[in-house]
Image 1: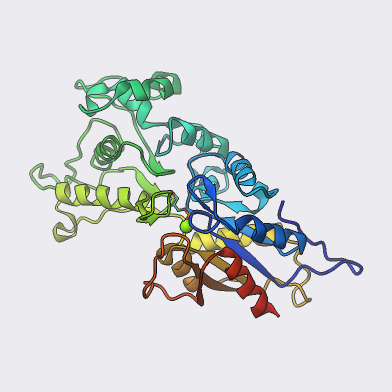
Image 2: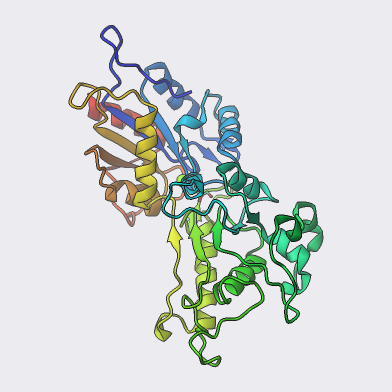
Length: 375
Ligand code: G3P
Ligand code: MG
């Protein structure tokens, strides 16, 4: 657990700084802990210096991921100081949220099997379908699919109370929102399915909107006919996996989908822009969510007392997400985020696209830099 220091007269005050650690390329690479990650987190816990893990990874519950990380890093961790790409999606499933999707039909895309469905249901979404459900119910939706992969994870759509009466020979499953929780495994199937819904009449699968009145116009009434919103949990074009070169991430799928969408609709030159809601680093919303989580679980003394959270050192390997996000983040509470770029992941040298405060070899050097700055 990331030790929290309570603030009483006879106890040390919470330090006025904390660390935020990216995971892939900073603490681990795929399923191996990086050399000095254990030593770094152990040191911070021993010296009661708070930290949070802030990753664009995902695809499993926070509990499951934290247990896996605790084992890999040999450090006691818990979900109170852990934010992954889709953690903020949970706010879209609560009743008082402005975008309350709790009872809406959500297509959850990405991840292994139906793990992301279970994550979504754990957040409170109670009307979730997956590509496996749909391709099993409508196998001709995409000719080149391995049905045997999807069948074990598929749930009959009818059981969900979805209106899937066949009409004009096409399914009429109505999807209200599309949420990409993690990197899709079958980009082709997921691209076809998402495209079908974006060009549908009101999210009814198997229909094609010609709202603009001219079926020959390529944009076919996109965004004029109640099509579902499209959410992405992370924009990473690349990430640091076990291969020695960076691998395409969820941002790669996004770019591929956008390329197909533009080819089909004519895209911006035809006045049609793919509309999407982005979560994950470097979005400000994710950094705000992470800072709130950091503040919640770190006893913060009254304003102005020693120990108020003044600085957060964001340690990352990806200039486009970790460094850019920390550099751009403007905290409503005035805390300053300082970006530290490590060489143990995506960044391989040269002038980074977004300038960090400092470039160091690895996470241990990053913490030593932060501690030196704090004196
Ligand atoms: O899917 C994981 C990847 O996008 C990056 O994860 O931990 O480097 O933010 P992380
Ligand atoms: Mg990373």
